[in-house]
Amino acid sequence: MTGANKGIGYEVAAGLGSLGWRVGVGARDEQRREEAVAKLRAAGGDAFGVPLDVTDDASVAAAAGLIEERAGGLDVLVNNAAITGGAPQTPITVEPATVRAAVETNVIGVIRTTNAMLPLLRRSATPRIVNMSSSVGSLTMQTTPGAETGPLSAAYATSKTFLNAVTVQYAKELHDTIILINAACPGFTATDLNGFRGVRTPEQGAAIAIRLATLPADGSTGGFFDDAGIVAW
Ligand code: NAP
Image (cartoon, rainbow, N blue to C red; front, side):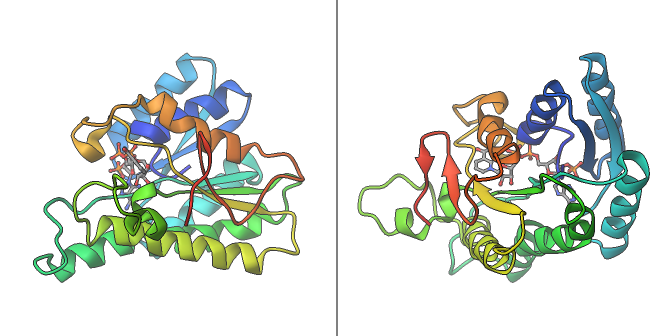
């Protein structure tokens, strides 16, 4: 799990832990990470901390090594870590550095992490990849008159559109394997990401990722889902 020390990611870890999974809690902030691991363990979960910065090749490679050592493999990768880059983000005023930072974490970080974890996932009998996206990245919704897609978001929303495209590319490449890869939208959830303005609880936000992480062998791949079903790309 990337970004599992707080917010939605923590609740995905807790949900998978309650299903009996051993969960690697990946994130940068050590104190918050170790507190999350302790809380998961106190609730009866089998969790361990994974120092992880998805923007750093060496960190991601070390994380893959640690997961191999601590868990002997990997069945599910939840690419959940993301940043917004702050506000406002209108396309004509946004700093290039803001766009670059969002893409580095939210897109390239997913590619970097996925490729480092693929050798482990390929050995699993039930490999699943969940990319935590957002409906704000849906071009269909962005271009539907009257659809509520929030403020202009030239770095964060566009990074999620990019992530959706990347998810489809992986699904195409992995179509002849047993790896199922899908994008998830948790809904507008109260977390640090939005100053806790979201209307859903992190537990509610986590549900779709848990469902996609535990799909049966004939489950979908190359799709985009929220609790209500299919999200238009
Ligand atoms: P959050 O509370 O801000 O948590 C983000 C997590 O990502 C933290 O654990 C953070 O830990 C980690 N992270 C950030 N940069 C990282 C990096 N470079 N390497 C490793 N970990 C990193 O956000 P959230 O709301 O739970 O969001 C979780 C996911 O849901 C994100 O993909 C977000 O885009 C998506 N989403 C959220 C909402 C919403 O309303 N909240 C809506 C749609 C989609 P460290 O800082 O310690 O590394």
